Image (cartoon, rainbow, N blue to C red; front, side):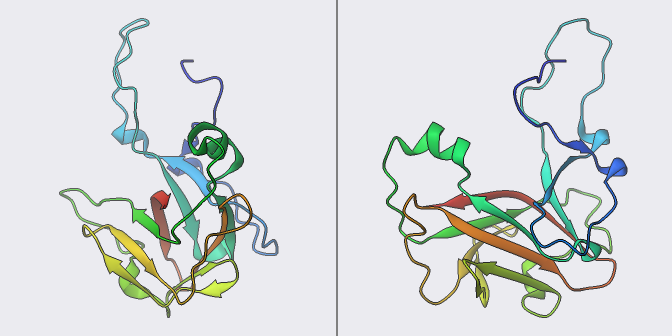
Length: 170
């Protein structure tokens, strides 16, 4: 295939079984097969960017990831690890058909959705565009020595799913 040097995720309908006893699992990189353009076009590249997302389900328990990860640091930081302590999380945008009942949004903080940054709970988000929220937390610092943050997500609503499209760290 076209993608050989990075993880392209897995189809949403093929999500792996949850590992609820582990707290070191990363959010699962997924894609919606129906959003991919299908064609018998030989080697023609139809789309170069897909609307993939990270998925966190109730049964996954806590899922965490370091942002920016080491590959992102190498590609974008250029040895400047200074951070302002501003973190924006964008959720998957529900198109015309709307969101299904499993969709968990920032409005459900902190009861049905729990987010922690470096072990401290997130109390709220500031809405930036309907699906992106700037994290509100007392004392978000500059991250670790490389400007990285350990961000943990947990969905508490039975049957709920969080769909994260991006995490941006300033």
